[in-house]
Image 1 (cartoon, rainbow, N blue to C red):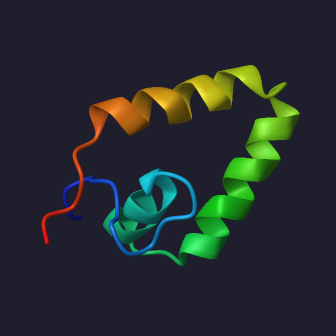
Image 2 (image 1 turned 90 degrees about the vertical axis):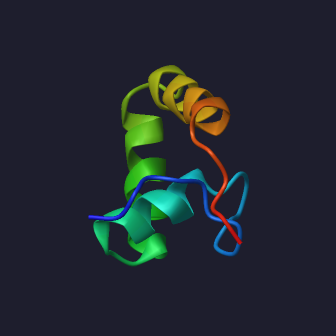
Length: 63
C-alpha cells in the first residue's frame, strides 16, 4: 500500500479521494461514489467533517 497523500492530478475538490483511491489501488470513481453514499446515509456532517480534516492533515503528493 502506498503512502496516503492528496492527489495533485486526480482531484475534484481537494484530492483526498483521489489520493485515497491511489493508495488502496481502486478506481477513483468507486471511491467517490462510496463517499457520496456514506455522506448522505450518515447525515452529511460526519463524513464532511472527516473530509475537511483530511484536507488539512494529508500532505500534497510530490511532483
